[in-house]
Length: 234
Image (cartoon, rainbow, N blue to C red; front, side, top):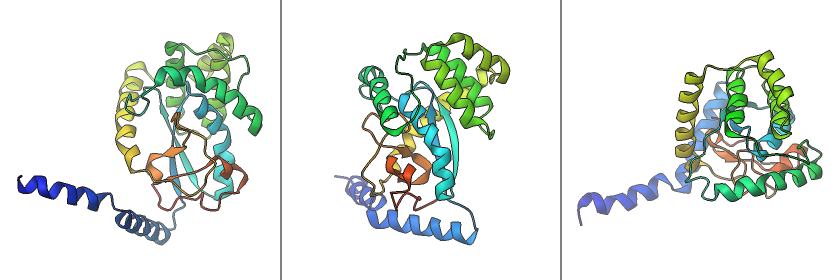
């Protein structure tokens, strides 16, 4: 066995050790406080993912309650390693979303229809154009509602009014983000809040924000999760 092979397990253990993770979080938190910056998180949003649609309705209130800045990042393409049963997710997630929406008093069409990929792409290109706008959240809700209701007239009206990112730019952005999000998700660690619902379509039911180094639970929308604020900023 070569020296490299002997050292690799030790290096891997060091990189993934809880103590090192805690030190990195403490360092980032100290730097954030010195720079007087608020906590920040990135929300990866897929309009064809029912869990994303529900979470996007909650996050503005969540951000105001905890005093954080949430930056949306629009996604569309799936990484097969993150979604090993995409066909099952496509079938079961909308059914799950209708029950969750009723339970948490959110909006999701009871008589939903699976959106075609080309229609989802059109709505995604519109959101990409307005990703940095304050009206992103309201636009995302309106587009998602029209998309899942299969309301083509309303969707066409919204696309005409708000426009879209050019197709070539949108394609490059979405492909790059799919690769980046899958590589960064491995660094996430959960916060000790037990009630969780996915906000990025993760079929295991966890809400993940890759650049925030934390996981927040659904209970945080009511302020009942004391550890909801991220331990380290993005």
